[in-house]
Amino acid sequence: MDRTRSVNICEPVAVAAVADYDEDAILGALASADEACTLLPPCLSGKKVVIKPNLVAKRAPEAAATTHPAVLRAVIRWLRSKGADDITVAESPGGVYSAARLRGVYSATGTETAASACGASLNYDCSFSETSCPDGVRCRLFDIITPILEADVIVDVCKLKTHSLTGTSAAVKNMFGTVPGIVKFEMHSRFPDYGDFSEMLVDLCRMMCLRADFVAVTDGIVAMEGNGPTAGKPRRLGALLASKNPFSSDVAAEHLIGMDGRTQALKNAAARGLCPASADAVPLVTVGGAPEPVKFALPDSVDKNGIEIMKNLFGGRIYKMFAPYPVINYAACVGCGECANSCPRHTIKMVPPEEAGRGARGAGVRRVPKIERDGCIRCFCCQELCPHGVVKIKKNPLTRRLS
Image 1 (tube, rainbow, N blue to C red):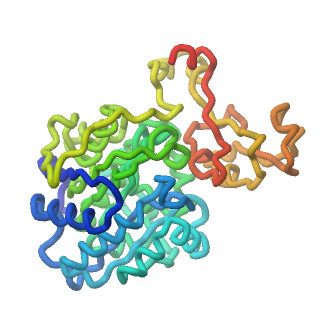
Image 2 (cartoon, rainbow, N blue to C red):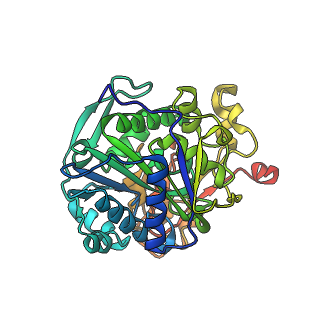
Image 3 (cartoon, rainbow, N blue to C red):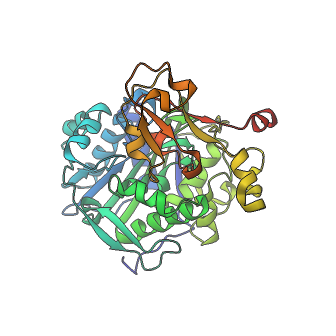
């Protein structure tokens, strides 16, 4: 890490009202934001610029689970206008980190076409290296994909979503995609406590800000509400955010969707002096009109009734009774096994339907997933990576009534 760099709490956040995915309008908003906030170095010629989009899974752009290709094209054109001649788009989606998986994700999300149209390279190098984070509060060692480690400039082009585990997903959470493939599952297993996992995310994102010139661009034109990051519903917000401080940008984004104070990682970041504690204190710069804040639907997993305070009562047994947990909709399950492959604690097993319980007996496949609740850490990786959306979140009946 470069000790001369820092995460400046006074760094402004540019917010623009962008009605739809008009590439020229997005480019204009980015140029205005850069002029107002000086987001990029004066000249990018000769620098290795790496764009890190959110390509969590094979989802079409209209699903609002991934960075929209129009935003990606506009970002590449913006970087070209600043002299960038070496631009790579790099991502590590969930699952096995392989060229074949990357090819499928790039194609399904429209990223391949967008990069090709604008002359950017797509990363297929699946190597990674162990990287020291000596100032980490919770984690001081990360495995990071090679193109990110080699970058002179990191452009974090994220998608604004509610998130079943972290509350929201935007610039900070997007950096978790720099951890390769199934190593992400190992990180969930290492940090099963939500508070520890959130501190780890802050360590990771801060490390990225100190490694290279860093700018975050948040695609909130059509965001996702409810059970994000992949099983929620598209919700038009009409917002684009940009800042050199991803933490402050996320505080502003959190406010725009009515999620103030619900993202633990941002609370942790504020406690470290990396961003303001509330959106009121974020230095905002409005370019081209301000988007109107709206109230997004919360994920089913979000604690709306304060049951988190039960975690330390009676060894956590009461909390386990009331906390939401994943279940399988066996009527729609195709038995692909992706949920079992993505479980960091290996508590999901593929078994014959008769072994999975009464609800699975009518399943028309040979093997179905069975979740062992005692070992489940409620990371919701299974829901996030299920390609068919059949993993649901179930609440205790009393909790549902309280909601």
